[in-house]
Structures are given as structure tokens and as C-alpha cells.
Image (cartoon, one colour):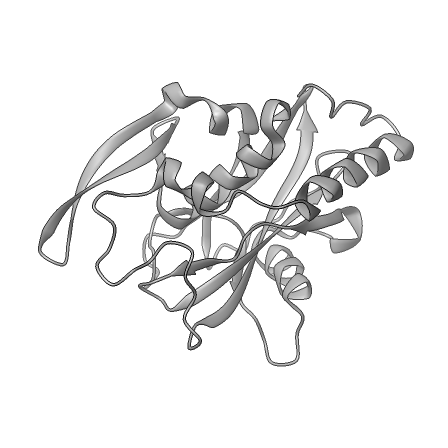
Length: 219
């Protein structure tokens, strides 16, 4: 966490937020960063980085805060009885309501899923939009920062558990393993990050791979 110290007071957190805003305002690595966690072969008819006009908007929140001198990001483990993406590790997020801004949707979903107070965080900007082929959603991932660990309360109807993952673990290439799944009748190799017996893979892993790339040595 070189360069993201100073969380002790409001000047520190505002300085961190300003630095993060500057990085997110610069050209983003996008697909180049996503490829680190991209399955192989890619899904047929899916072009990395391309977003169809028919894609439905969704938003997610990657929140950063310090624990014991390390930046961490909270992720949800979805309930195993949910109809979509059961048991998967995800960022708090969901579809955008009519008339709602993308940023407001990201904060609302974080409030609904993990009880995050939107007034307790500084939104610094957004990562590259990410199209999810299977759901036809385009996810707009926002990045926020807090000076201390917020109080969380998970929504038990959707979330099985909340896990707080150090960014250093997401950046650690030694944690990347490979698994095999059957998709559309074909075997697909997919990379995942080993997190204490859980697998972080798919869209969430690719989005967080871009966050790691944006932060660089500070991850």
C-alpha cells in the first residue's frame, strides 16, 4: 500500500480519494487488464470490450478501506439457492432503476446488499464498463474509498457471507489457479483467485483485475 497511507484523518482520506480520482480519470487499461482473468477459449460471439446496444445497464461498487495497514475490498458470496450466479463471489451491485444514475445505483445496491452508508464513502470514479454475455447486462463498476472500515449488515435473502479481501491478494499472481468447466458443450479453462477455499472468477475477477492494474504498486 505504498502511497495510500494517511488514513488517520480527513485530510488523509481526501488526499487518497483525489489520487484515486486522478488515476481513474486517466485512460483505463480495460480489456488489457481483463485478459489476466479471462477464460479460454473466449465465449463464441463475445468480443472483449464490445458492448451491444441492447445491453441492460447495471452498476457495482468496489469499496476500498484500510485494515491493519492494508487496503481491502468487501465482496459478497451469493446465496446458493439464488436462480442466478448461485454461490459466486461478487461485488455488491445490480440493475439500474428507471431514472436512476449509474453511481446512485451502485451506492443503492451496496446499501441494500451489505448495509453500506453511502455518506461514509468517497466515490472516486469508475472502471471500464464490462459486458456480461449470459445476462445481457453491462456493468458499470464504481470505485469508492473510506478512511476506516464501515459498519456492514448483509441482506440474508441474497448474501450468504461478506468477505474482506486484501488488494494485495488480488494482485498476487501466485494465487491464480486454473479450473475447467463445461460451457455450451465445450470444456473451458478458466483462471480463478484462490481465497481461503473459495474461487473468485468470471466478471468480478476481471473487473477487479482492472482495479489492481489502475492501482499498480499501491495494490
